[in-house]
Amino acid sequence: MNEQKDRKDRVVIVSGPSGVGKSTICKEVVKRLNNAYLSVSVTTRPRTEGEVDGEDYWFISEEQFRQRIDQGALLEYAEVFGHLYGTPKEKVDEALAAGKTTILEIDVQGAKQAKMIYPDAVMIFILPPSAKVLAERMKLRGRENAEMAEERLDWADDEIAVAWQYYKNMVINEDLEQAVKEVVQIIQGPQTQ
Image 1 (cartoon, rainbow, N blue to C red):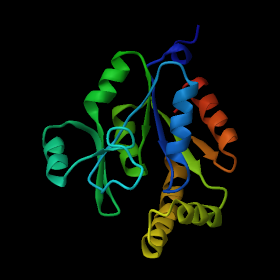
Image 2: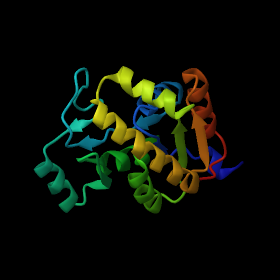
Image 3: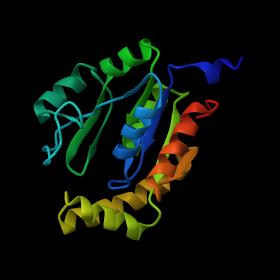
Image 4: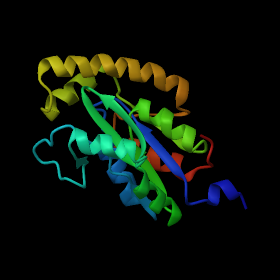
């Protein structure tokens, strides 16, 4: 028996540019896997309409976030577009101790930090079919003004360039169902970064 393949306590890091569909893919993947946990990040950014505290993110103040950094309570953290984002360490530790496949939906900066802690983590980067499609998806989300959307698109180019260096698994989200299937297959396959 392949010990690596049969391990259930693996860490999966899923990253991709804003608007690519990471959250949707991750939530769907968790529904399809047995014994999986999707980590909920903490953030200092304001909650948008329809977001649920503790489900989409844990929305906290910058002071609370800094306290968590000082206490070593975050597995990783980064500043993105003027807001802080981080992964609560305790929740990840609990999920791994329970033998769960633990999915971290984090940006490239955080992924590099998490990979140092979990060198066997499976790294998956979600790509848009094209920059034009990504821009259209961001516009449909309606979360960003034109200036912010442009900044996020520029950032996406940088993230994608870095991803080719650090991520073994690249999934294009052109068709949601196909992208979800590919991510599930990567997670269930032999663990090789």
